[in-house]
Image (cartoon, rainbow, N blue to C red):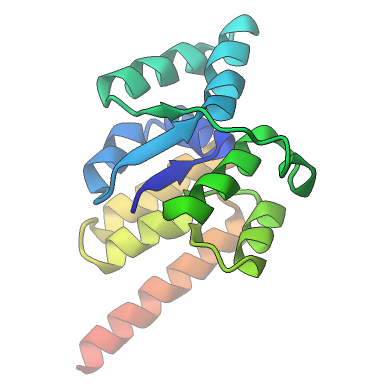
Length: 170
């Protein structure tokens, strides 16, 4: 099993400065494919996006492998190469992290393992790997970079309230 990051997820966790915290929480290896590397690092540096250099340093620091795969047969299913590669790699063996709603629904339809970034962090909170304050701060950081929505935040806050209520009644 492995975690597979699509391009938007990699960008969100770098921009929100959550990459290192994410890496400390994962229990499986993390990978990206060459399409994600091309989109985030190569194109990002070409366009002078400061997060591209930051992402490259983090990928190198944590020795995240970049897997080369042919996405041409499946590219028509998704909006971009990063989501397509995430799809292909998750079919092999992995859990795709994506924040794209259309891609997420396609993954579910194909019965592949997929999770949204904010849900990943919520699961870490439920497993007591994160405190409530840490989780809420993560949501705030993700919201600033468009990695989650106010609607999702309200959903998670309600789940926290329910959890507290259940813990109190037990």
